[in-house]
Image (cartoon, rainbow, N blue to C red; front, side):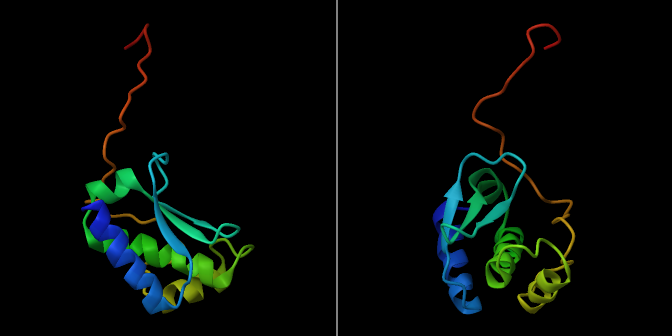
Length: 117
């Protein structure tokens, strides 16, 4: 998905859900799809995740992180968060996003062991 489209659609979704956090892209994560940053009031999406997937998968991550923003810190993926996640349309709250089509774009650099390749 195009990064600009993801930000535009994601920001619109956050407004629809009543979440006032800023949506940003983060080039560093290699395994995490998204992160809710309570102190800075940001929701970060992995750039590698966004560019390698379609909106339906990115949307689920935005909804997931928006549920964290709505309930605040300290609830992790417990019952309070799960209720909010369901309300926000998260499929399978309490579980990692599992989809056979989920992809992560390759990293810009690769670390290779000089002995074993």
